[in-house]
Image 1: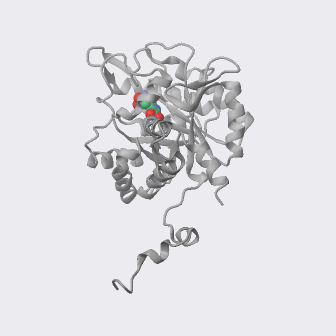
Image 2: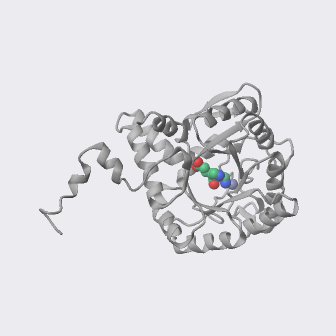
Image 3: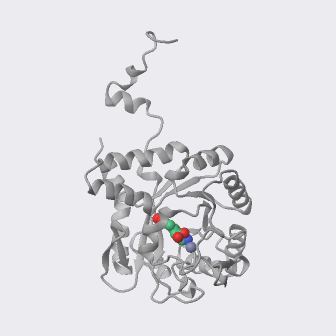
Amino acid sequence: MSFPENRPRRLRRTEAMRRMVRETSLSVDNLMYPLFVCPGKGVRREIASLPGQYHLSVDQLAREAEGILELGIPSIILFGLPEKKDNVGSEAWRSDGIVQRAIQAVKRAAPELLVAADCCLCEYTTHGHCGVVLDKASGDVDNDATLENLARVALAQASAGADIVAPSGMMDGTIGFLREALDEAEHEGVILLSYAVKYASAYYGPFRVAVDSAPAFGDRRGYQMDPGNVREAVREAALDVEEGADIIMVKPALPYLDVVAELRREFDVPLAAYNVSGEYLMLKAAAEKGFLDYERAMVETLTSVRRAGADLVVTYHAKEVAHLLSKAW
Ligand code: PBG
Ligand code: ZN
């Protein structure tokens, strides 16, 4: 059937019609909200590189968690700013480390809120790399030695009450190694959310400023993926699924929507995408200049990530979207 019998515009005439045939919807159910926890008490400091996001001390974070639960957002993911960094990032696995204390406080204040913990070392190491550095000149990271430390971090997070452990360092064999370590310690109920496909991206810039984790030498291209590759993304994800990842994630989201779509076709485990700091900042900065409608751009962006095939979107926009959805109709 073609024109004039077929008039596709018929279905676009009113908002009710558009809603009725809309293929992709955005719901608060699909959101995970990243939060940054810092030392101190009563601290709620806006992050210069992430307007509208805050460094929160443990007490403030607990209050924030209650508000997030009230908005209907099901989960958060925690990043920590340690008291003190060192060469291996040992605060990441101390039982009284910043994220472990944060997990406990959130679980007390808002028990139903799912708490994920980013499991990496770059926020805790003086050199800013995601593991044990072998060679300063090249910034080469020792894969297998790093796995041992990541297992310590995962166990500390699980013991503190994390529902989800999310390794983000792109070390080979991480998922299998952590699954075994968690199961051995009777944490078989803890979910592994794998940053299975994480690209070496310029879009992490504002995040690295926020947690002061830019590598002091070298870069992360020896472990994070090359932006030109998509077949390799399928291989990476296949390994993680085989090793027992409960959820796999693509990061960043917008520049890699084709990768999200490809993984959606290839795998049927839940799929997440991380709408990263640089993506968030682009909209904030453009809106601040008055050159785009922030709310519409935000909804369009997040809808595109869902349309590409992500079940779950990790995003700094989560609270703003939740507000918007709650008053939409
Ligand atoms: C740490 C980590 C990074 C992000 C999440 N976990 C940064 C990096 O690899 O430098 C980025 C998050 C964002 O940009 O919002 N491995
Ligand atoms: Zn890292």
